[in-house]
Image 1: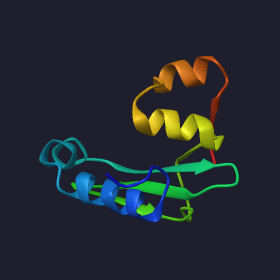
Image 2: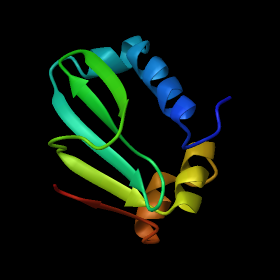
Image 3: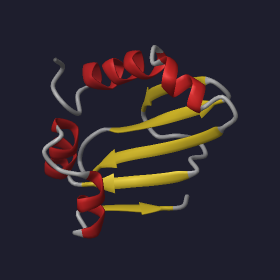
Length: 98
């Protein structure tokens, strides 16, 4: 397993998303870009585009929604030890329109 928040982790996310039939099917009628960033760490975005799903390193040109957090929270979310909703409720993660 790749180290969370590393370039290889982002590449593994892309492979998993692009190869997930259920995710592609759910995205069949949608065009959406979600950007994720960690303070002092990486930024990546997920592109849902009418049946295609990709995870791309770096910021998005025009995201529909941005999520940001600190590296500790991002690692806990990636490891599955912190529920994303709990992180939002506790103010450990924020979202904002672009």
